[in-house]
Image 1 (cartoon, rainbow, N blue to C red):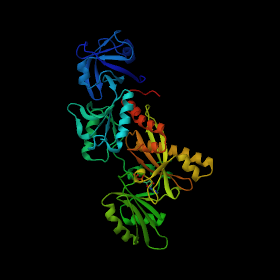
Image 2: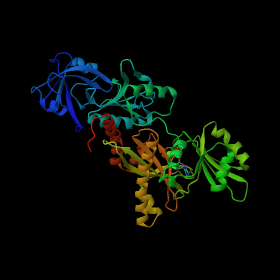
Image 3: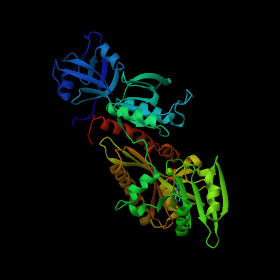
Image 4: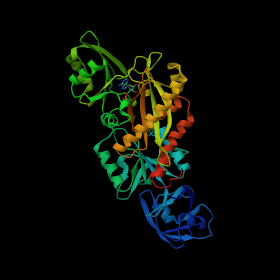
Length: 453
Ligand SMILES: Nc1ncnc2c1ncn2[C@@H]1O[C@H](COP(=O)(O)OP(=O)(O)O)[C@@H](O)[C@H]1O
Ligand SMILES: [Mg+2]
């Protein structure tokens, strides 16, 4: 496969309709000859072309007739990645970020607005056509999408081709969204991540894995409170977690007192901790059923997580694929729960700290610290590989790993829409930039623009 290369596309009104003119050098790179008839693609939009190759243009430049530029929604004098395959010549790749839009025109994608603006800037510098869109703005018959891009003057509306690669960042999951995804896939769009991976599915896959099973806390589907009681008798403390939830929402911790039929529970509702004690398992059921609603839950042994100043700590590791489609560790950070909190999530008030700093406070032996750091990286990469092997192709995961006070590691969960803010919070701006670049490099790989290492 060719090495990744970019060209500057110029608008040339002197060219006859449907023509692309390139230098002899570019013709050689792409293996094309003067007079070839070929299609030009931007995302899933394409148009037939007649090629002219000659010395009137030099190096990595191409001239395009105005009708072609217009048809493919391309901008003049812009840098684009270029590659060739059985379909034709491709420019970009075109990368669409799928997300829910809000009514705030300054921050149309809420808390993700800054992240998306960074993605677009970095993507454009790499020769990509990068924009944000919502599922309801795809025009399948014309193969175009009304979306937003980000430039000098902020967010701007635009019309873009249906992309080569979609980076799904929308919250939640619904049948209409899934139908749009399937339809886009049938046109050849590749999605970086699957739409959903529940905690129970993740557990089933990893608990059967030969080398990973020892890291997986004992977990069951919470089909009844008898089930919860059985786990409590065994472990003394459990976490009840919704199967399809994130950000620490609707999680409950239950402790069973040793010599009494009493159950101490804690959860967070409307940002306030709710703490109580129930008599007997029926009493507990009665107290929790309204809060749990009809959501499906898992019940999991409580891990005795490390603590910093009495607050629980765990580790978030971001694993991402790169331009060669390989899993890599992008970065990691500790999350320290708010005082008294049963979860460490940043969005429920947790703070962030460098992993080495937390480990240095908790363990005195440098060899043990080194072992924990290496084992943690291996656990994250192997979990990503195992989850992918048993579900579908993935490009990035935010993996939560717990360390207990003996130094043993536990896999807590894997997130398909990881946040990056944590790297800013621990002052690792280079890691943050890398975390934004990698999905774009992986998109380039997925779209077939390069496989160089
Ligand atoms: N089994 C457990 N034992 C101890 N703490 C846990 C356990 N499960 C979750 N937690 C704490 O709760 C947080 C949120 O749980 P998690 O499974 O990651 O759900 P969410 O998807 O809501 O983030 C974890 O980061 C960890 O701090
Ligand atoms: Mg989590």
